[in-house]
Length: 137
Image 1 (spheres, rainbow, N blue to C red):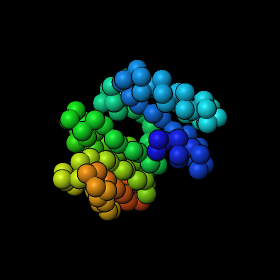
Image 2: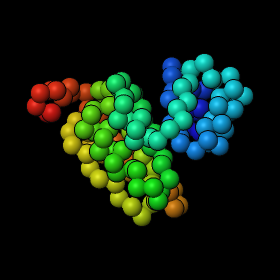
Image 3: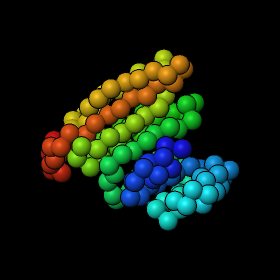
Image 4: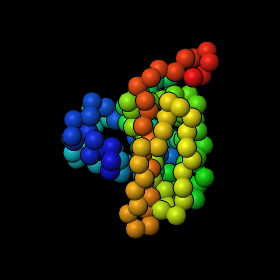
């Protein structure tokens, strides 16, 4: 939903990743119905495998894995370790409201957290300072 909303508001491109066939089919159908399929890539597969193969950076990343799957913290750690956000990029991670998400190493920092009933949303921001590939700082 958030990816389609971003596309409808002018995002140049959006990548959707889901391993459930029914979810992938629903995403494809919604993209077709909204006329946004030409600016979207739909990946049918496991999200950590996708992250592990990435060779690009993003301006915005939305993470909303199934809460019981145990994917959120590993995905956050991978994104920060491999610096997958562009400078000034935003990472939005949804989780149960009673769960605090971890701080990430610079140049990533928690910008804000929100609670919506039983849902929590943590917004991370990547600073504009470039990190050296050799030192990781």
